[in-house]
Image (cartoon, rainbow, N blue to C red; front, side):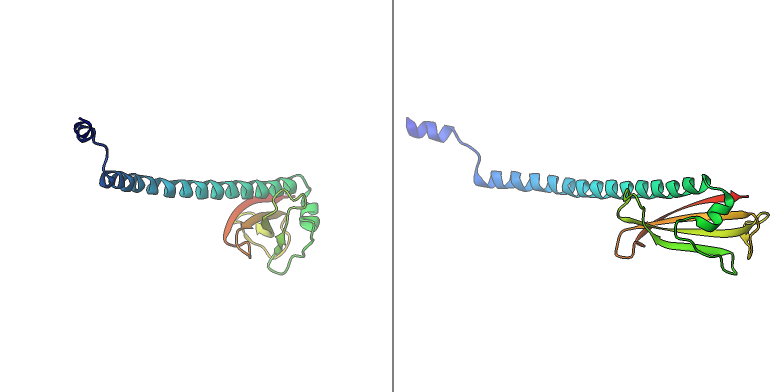
Length: 152
C-alpha cells in the first residue's frame, strides 16, 4: 500500500527544475540590462540638467550687469580682448560648490550687429557663450553650450 501511494504521488524531476531555472534566467537577464541602461540614462540626463542650470546661472549673472561691467569684470577672472575681439576665461569652477564636478568656459566676443560676425574692436554688442563640461579628467567628455547677446 505504501509503495502504491509513493508511485501515484510523483513530484518534479531534477531535469524539470533545471529547465525551469534556465528559462527563468533567460527571461531575467535582459531585464538586468534594461535597469543598468535606465540608470545610466538617468545619470546622463541629470548631468545635462545640471550643466544647463550652471550655464543659465552664468548668463543670468551677465544679464544683471551693465555692458561695461561684463566687458571688464565678467567673469571674476578678468581677461583682455585680443585683436580678434575674443576674450576667453577657461576652466572656471562654481564658487558656491553647487556644481562640484563641472567646469565652464566663458567666451566674450565683439560682434558686428548686422551679420553677427566677429568684430576686432568694441562695437557695443557682445556675444557671451558659456560652455560647461563634465566627465573625464579634462572635463571635455561631455559639454553643453549656451549663448546670449549683450548690448550697450
